[in-house]
Image (tube, rainbow, N blue to C red; front, top):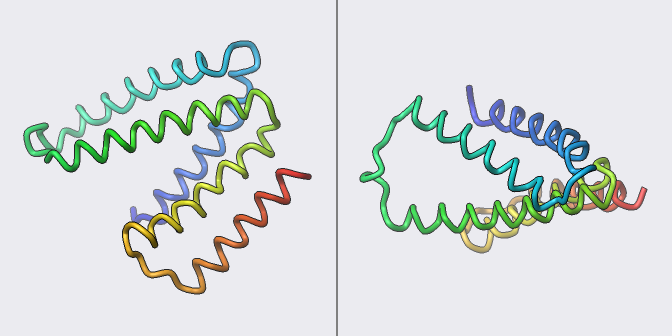
Length: 138
């Protein structure tokens, strides 16, 4: 499968996550819900990594460790905020606002990764931003 099919599957599961998580946070604290979800993901991810074992730990460089750890911290903070937002708001409003991460990623990729921005990026980013704002205040 190519990157686009994997990305579509990611979008599907992220959308499913919003609905399942909204139901899951109704009766408990959002931070506890995030912790439970994290344990499930931890077990799942390690199972997949060990079953597919393509690389040893010794092959992972220091720079890679640093950026994966920072990415993990950013993910954790995102999840804590996301679950709290789901607890307080409607999934149909929270999920689109959360997808503003696409616009943030485009901007950060241009600044830090020096990725070339075309008119497609600007138009697509603007549409995502506009759609999120419209759905948030619908």
